[in-house]
Image 1 (cartoon, one colour):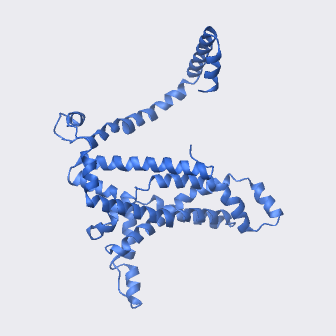
Image 2 (image 1 turned 180 degrees about the vertical axis):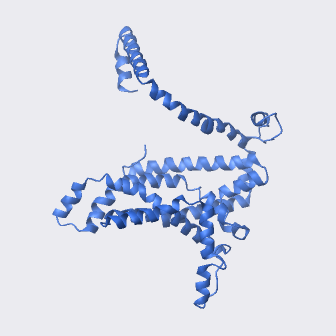
Image 3 (image 1 turned 60 degrees about the vertical axis):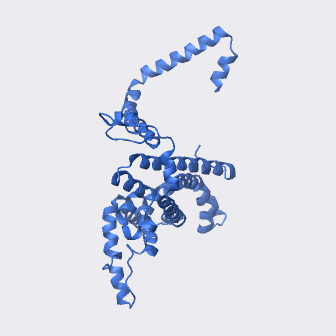
Length: 329
């Protein structure tokens, strides 16, 4: 109950009714004065309804034996398909292949989180401390550019470097070593995924931390300089504490995406030789849903992933609020 509602509740009935009517009148006066702003919201609301809320009907496929030809159109087919309860979820957890896929997803995601999460923070601090402006602009541009390349292009670039006849293998052979099949060797493929992900996204992820650093009061640095603090002390005691809220925000969101190991990247780069270490939930859903036309099972997999992501986001946010005093909500 907000303050205005509490005030209305304490009022005599007639006075409360008048107060409620006055609030309604104020809303409608505001609406008439700013109707153009509400009209501008219509496209965004329509997008949410059509592309976000309407597809939620498809979640029912996780609890049905979906038959594409059960009705005259897709909606009728969904509605008329028979309910089977938790059948598809039982299939998921009884399938040894899915348990292997879960393990691959968690391992790849944790590798990326542990090895790549600190890198944008370090890059942002380095760029923030760089005093040569033209060099700073050039470095920012160079590290940002890979984000705008598709994974297909990146695969081509790295295959020309790490492929069987790529530059790296030619260099290894020239030094007397034996060539390495980076793209088909299970012991190297996960490392390749982490490395290419870092090369592509590190620059883009630094934007958040650089923006957070601009919000730090410059007088803090000036006072620290007067007190004799060096550059590293200023970074440790001013810059890093100043961006901790953003670090926690990004960390909470990343933990919520722990079951998303990079569908596009893995789909483009992997092959049957590395399925045992690279097949993740999203590629498994893609192969089952489209390859075998088992839409009910793939929907159950997607719903399972979403529920786990929600639990992780909520839990990590609560832990951050309790122990660090920082949270998203």
